Amino acid sequence: MIRTGGFGPDPKPEKQEKKSTKWIKPRSQKKERLERKYNKRRIVWIEDKNCAVYHDRKAAQIHHMMGRVGYADDWARERDLPLLLDERYWLPVSFDGHRQIEHNPDWAKLNGYSIERTNVRKV
Image (cartoon, rainbow, N blue to C red):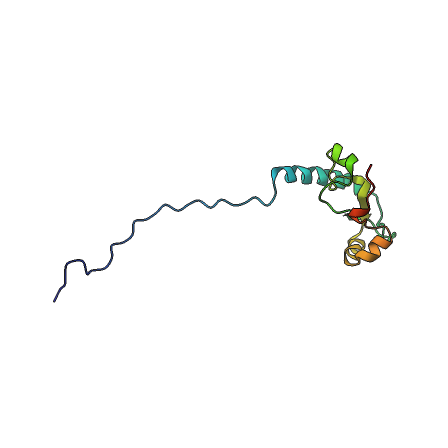
């Protein structure tokens, strides 16, 4: 016996257009410009420098003594010089020297390799 009258399977739903996926950029355009400028300056600045922690080793990285985000003081803010580009707070280090600083923050501050951001004098 065949039944009719609306008891059959539901009709197939209409196909909908797929929405294009819009990815969020990992960095803003401003951050990309800053990083390009930093990478160019870093190569020149670190050339022929020795590690500040292990003096017998060649420097391979830059330790940002106050971090990389924000401004060190009013002088830097007026000149739009973020910590990422502020060479006053760059320290040439080897891979091992950088690891020593990052893994021992109290030791690094005690020995002048890192600076507490709250202790910076306003210029």
